Length: 304
Image 1 (tube, rainbow, N blue to C red):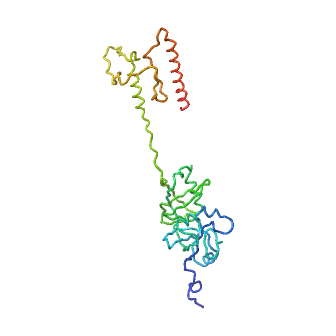
Image 2: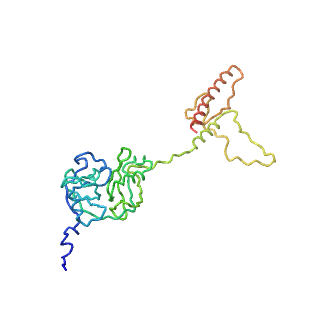
Image 3: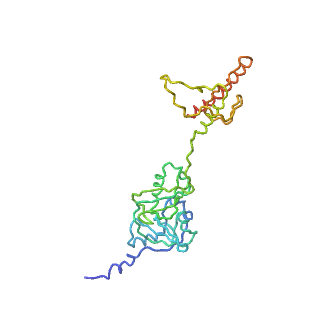
């Protein structure tokens, strides 16, 4: 019976991880037709020789890789979309190259890794325009289908309605790098960069009330409901809590109130029309005043 020295002697690449260096280029440099699908996700294109080597190695599926720019000490993770790149080259989405601080043709290290399945992630939109999306979680979920993994600190880009939105990955659980393939992941959003909480409007009616009291108190002559009443049972009437006479400024008939509050109707009964020649003139003035108040009333009805 023959005995072998072990599987390592027969298959020397069995326990050796995939670890190679490639010249990195953006997807726009890929020969042939434009590949917009690569820009929409988080997967890269590798050469066919990488596939041959991976098939001989004991790698876990789905294939996940750690991408490192050793010059800048920047790192991220990605999946693989296709093995159609030229030998010695790899093609990355533009947002991924920007995270790694890579220029066209620079060297990148790619090694196979195994990542835990994601359970939670938190994103920070980089613009308040992200709040204009009706259902941001559904949009994010649809775009993450083109991603294989997430890395804490990455600035990913998603596209919606022909517009690019950037999101910073603030947190991932259970690790700083997770795979999001076939997982149930809870998602949270932090306030967008530059977003400020809207201040509540003060719907204070006190200025309008004060102005009304001032106007009524400033009227000279007859003031409606300004007298005192008596109880029918003979008991003493309780003292009024509000002083009915407040004199602050004079009111002159015929001069418009430019600070008149919108929607407020005032009926001035302090001055009555003369019985003589001025009666027709006063009636005309009353009609003009009624016309102006009627306009405000119709406008307030439209607002309601």
